[in-house]
Image (cartoon, rainbow, N blue to C red; front, side, top):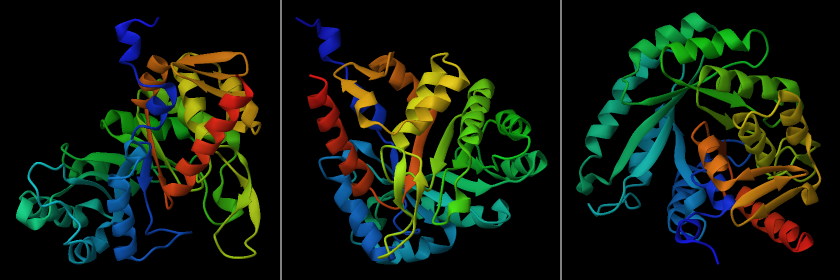
Length: 313
């Protein structure tokens, strides 16, 4: 019989996917209209898989559109949690921050529809740019800097650490050249771990496991080798427990579903094991990924876990 502390623990799979998927339905390849994306997010918030749902991602330039088309969807009950939004800032962050702060002020009260922007995301190509942009962003906002994974990644991550912000990696897109080499992905994660910088990923992670998939939803779309989000986040978890970059690279490249086994309170990949506690700790470091689809990555994961669990019983 399990002791009470064990019964209170979440399953390993629950620990892994909690708040993992930031919904980016407005962006390619889905490219949903604002109303459709907002309706989707609203339905996900109350669906069976809501624990896996993170923030709604929106460009700062479309906040007005969100307010107009989502007026009847935002919660107006003071007892309900406000929608959590992550806003993409282009160019000079200082020029857009007034829109962010004004939005938050308007949506404090239930009658306006409760929503809060607590995360901003922006790009940077040099350490000095990170320092400059960060100085304009209030500490009350979590800021993710998307950085290139070629060149001196360590100096970029050190700059992010120096200003107390977070990092972001682009793991794919709608063209083959948008996918970084696997070695670059592992170096990025390892540098973030070394510098104690939290990170998120974006693009190209629609599927749990690495494999050949269509680049877009268009009929006849070309295929390409895409990373699986399980590969990325479990590689990060193994690095977090002290495994080598070489081992993490193998996890990132794994394509065999039978190699991934989730049990109630542990996860196994080949001969390596992660406890639920270790996964939860790693998720404090590896935060989330943005996806234009929520149903696809979560639905495929449900099928994968059923298959691998039955195969290993």
